Structures are given as structure tokens and as C-alpha cells.
Image 1 (cartoon, rainbow, N blue to C red):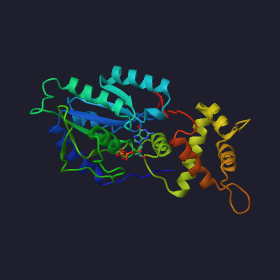
Image 2 (cartoon, protein in one colour; image 1 turned 135 degrees about the vertical axis):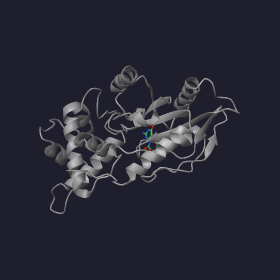
Image 3 (cartoon, protein in one colour; image 1 turned 90 degrees about the horizontal axis):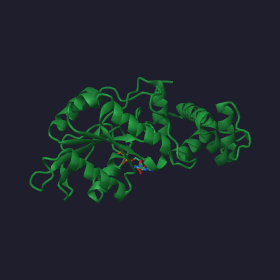
Image 4 (spheres, rainbow, N blue to C red; image 1 turned 90 degrees about the vertical axis):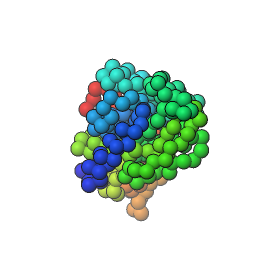
Length: 277
Ligand code: GDP
């Protein structure tokens, strides 16, 4: 399966993002904590040059804590960029980000000379949620389209920081098929009906390999079957996703399973670890 991404937008988005980056002091790169490599845009490191950057590992509440720690260490060791796991919905956690922004740009941070920050990231990683929490009110539209803003307004956060009111939208690397499946599993990219079953099978296989216990606990499987198709079928039965003849409707089963997995119903799960391709 090839999951398509929006062709044509990239060259333009590339230009716009470099232009925006020139006018800001610190980049807040939002990644999905459960898949920090696959949810990154690998051109950003080049586009930002030596501008300070913070990698926010968002949706920390859904990710496997031990793997998150490993990611933080890896990012700091390999890129020298500070990685901050948090939940964009939690004010207390987001406040740490404010402190870090000020620390990274020590020569600014005064009302007349504020730190200018911008949130960037691929769709669905929580950029709008983060902007809204930082601003303390609803500013950014949740669930925006694949295009980036050119006329970003500045929000004064009244703490020596101004923030672009809309996020810079980046695109994920879709040339890597495993990364595409991880993105689809997390819900960052959509999938058509037929692809949904494939994504469900991928997720079932992943959970069988890495989080067998979570799978058997959630779906009360005394013996977790050895094939992803059988796992998905059993999950479908548990969740009541039946077709007219009494068999399992695999598409509904895949949708229901992915919905539960994404929402953390099975427990805290990370879809990739540092060092694996
Ligand atoms: P954007 O496309 O990057 O702007 O992402 P949104 O801010 O629209 O968030 C995408 C989805 O992720 C929404 O359903 C949010 O409620 C959810 N979300 C954002 N941040 C978090 C978080 O820290 N934890 C959890 N569990 N969900 C989050």
C-alpha cells in the first residue's frame, strides 16, 4: 500500500516556512511522543539553520514512559536539541516550555523586546492545542488543512514571549512505508476504507510483538493468536463489529481498534523506539 501525501504543496510550504523562521527567535517543533521520528519533518533541521529549537514530545500522556525517556536522551545526545515531553492540554506542563523558551533566548524576553516563538509540526500532533493552552484561550483552529500560514498574527503571552497565532504546517516523510503506517496508526494521516484494514493489521501485528499483555487485557484474549488477521477478528467480535452473516466486519473492527488504541484505551503505547528504522 502507498499512502499518498499532498504533492505540489511542498515547494511552496518550504519557501514560506524559511521566510517565517527568519523572523522568529525560537522554533517549537511539535512531535507526537509516540512516534517522534516518523512525525518529524526531516528538512526542518536544515531550514532552521542555527535558530534555537525545542522539540515538544506532545501527547506524553499516551506514550510509553520508558521509551519517552530514551527519546529525550537520544535527541539531546544526537542533535543537541532539548526535547520536552508534555501534554499540550496541561497548563502546568506547558509552563515548562515557556521557561525553556526564555532560557534559550536570554538576550530577549522583555515586554519591549520579546522572544518571538513559532509552533511548527505535521498535522494532528497537537499544534493548535498547544497554541491555545499557551495563549490561555482559543486562538488556533483545531484540525487545519495542509497549508501553512503566511500572515501569522502575533499573540502577546504577557510573559516576555510573543507567539504566531497559527502554526507552521510541515509534512511528514511519506517515502518510508513503515513510518507511513505508524503515522496512519496514530491518526496523523488518513486512510481510505481498504487501507484502514491494512493499518488495523499493522497495528495488531505491532501490538502482538510489543504489547501483547495490553492486547490480551483489553480484549480478554486468553491466548493471543499468532496472526494479525486473527487478532483483528477477535477484537472485532469483542467490540461487536459483525457483518450481516454473523462474520466480523473487518473494516469496522479496524476502525474501532484504531480508535481505542489512539485514545489510549489499551494503555500507554509508543509506536517506535530510538534506533529502529
Ligand atoms: P494540530 O493539527 O497539530 O493542530 O493538532 P490539534 O491541536 O488539532 O490536535 C489533534 C488531536 O490531538 C485533537 O483531537 C486534540 O484534542 C488531541 N491532542 C492534542 N494534544 C494532546 C495531548 O497532549 N494529549 C492527548 N491525549 N491528545 C491531545
